[in-house]
Image (tube, rainbow over all chains, first blue to last red):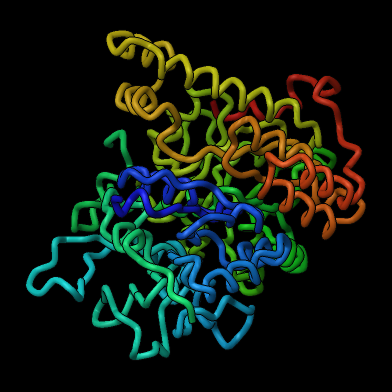
Length: 199
Length: 307
């Protein structure tokens, strides 16, 4: 059986750039379905938490009672998660515990760390796994957060000026930038190759 | 401009195309959300707590502009700074159509989005701001594909259908969403050799008409605005293809703004589910009484400004 046939992918579609993630998966031949309610997680092996407004996403995850199902399914080793930008904030230990997050990724974040929208930027990423000049993968940073106090056990996939901007651990991938807003599929490939792991 | 706005980002340089893609990128991140008009820091806090995805700072909500008359201008600088201080969600602000200096002030204040809006009294009867000259993204109103493409040509990174602001009557928002969808459908299905003539008829740039033909949608997101007053109104606009909604007078002219705001956020996030929209409608405050579109004379319409 091919790798692609083995995965069942969802994209949290309450608010944010969910359509861009569905399109990115489609470019890899994977049909992703939109998730808005806990029951829609049934049968999924992979879920994207897209970029959007983290305050709004936080509000909606509470309103629609999705925090515990997400945490439990991931901890049970059933669901691999990919968070981009605001999604990465939700995966992390947050910033000083306020507002609460999933706390699955052993890193904290600083929100809007680079400033307001006029400070948003695109930059070529430093990829950890590709020695020498990188393939020119561009990171799109929009009102982006920054990882701080990162557990050294996490695998750093990409850096910007030496700081980690993409982190991976069994069953989890998090980027502070937006791979879904580029034509690149590098990070979505990594995500689909993830295997959920019980923790 | 290339039809597929994803392409420029594959290139490792920070070009003008990349800047435009960053603007459109922020618009995409707002999809599925509610952008609330606010005039004070307390209203901004209420909006953020209710789950709004952004706030729009303005001097008076459209219903008050309608009632009080006079010249409607950009919000006071002090007010915008106060609002920026109390919320972490993006802060937008309105400038008058064609008012280059107001636009520059808002850019200087580092608002996250500028709305060059027909709700304010237009400053230039003929020209809009050349939005490509700015690093801050702009949103503009449109009633048709023709208007939308002209605004995108000027550099708008987000379109909102105009509706009729300050009325609480959703019918014009509906009319404009349907009009836009109908015209996009025609362009998408037209044979390629008809596109130059369509561009001429639409009074829109040919490359953008080609982009619509290839994508089957606008090359930037489209949100709804103008007259949305209830969770059901918001759900209706989303069902008609809007990717997010702007709510102006609808919240702060209802009898319970916090409840109404939260209910509209809820209905917008899950607009396809009748149970959710129905619950939101029940939880909402009583809607503003409003003014029916048919009670307005031609001179009272805001939507005809700046075509």
